[in-house]
Amino acid sequence: MKRQNDLFDNVLWAKKILGISDLETKKDVQKKYRELSRKFHPDKCPEPKKEECAQKMTEINEAYKILKQYMEEYLFGFTEEELKKQDPNSDIKNRFLHDWNWGDGN
Image 1 (cartoon, rainbow, N blue to C red):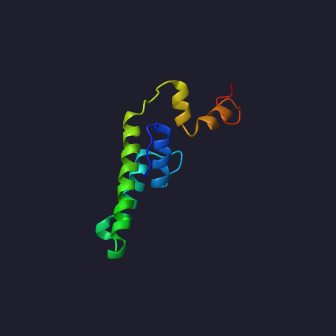
Image 2: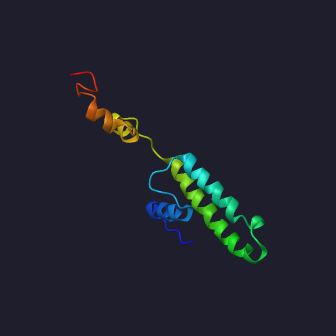
Image 3: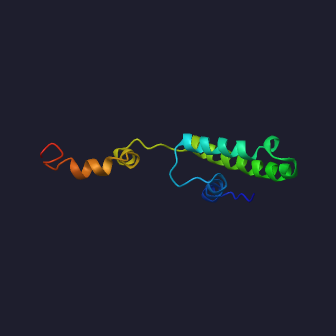
């Protein structure tokens, strides 16, 4: 577990530990954390692997803490541009909105 003071490096490390992609919802991150917690919790590991599981669980908890803090402190943009970035259908709407076959005919 090697953490830097750099947010980007910390988030990259946390993503790697939790095995998540670049775009995830908060619920997806929580789900992955819970899944890994169940898998590596020392109380659920066989005796010869308890120490290994305890170390892995420490990393999982630290990674989740980093991502949770990042998500809580994230600044949400409410501009049109930012909202369009989050709308998965915005590109489709823009391409077809003014097509006379699909949109308003203008």
